[in-house]
Length: 66
Image 1 (tube, one colour):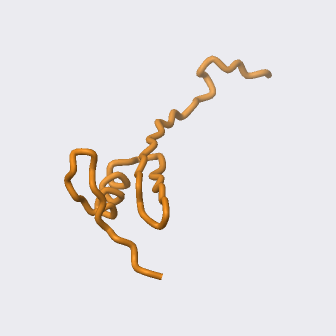
Image 2 (tube, rainbow, N blue to C red; image 1 turned 90 degrees about the vertical axis):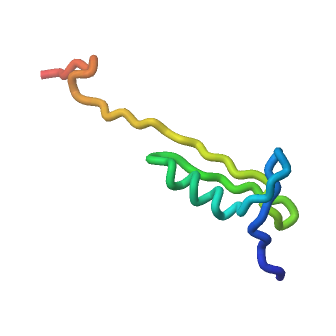
């Protein structure tokens, strides 16, 4: 098994280290996920999904029953 090639070409033709792209995406997230897509043993795509979380309180339109 050969080691993974850490370089990928971006759409503008520049070579970049995919591990660095993953690190940057993770560093920029508070909540979410980073997904790495692999085809034939090569990284072809990296996606970041950011989630925004809201904390609900009891008086946000929810009527309590007493």
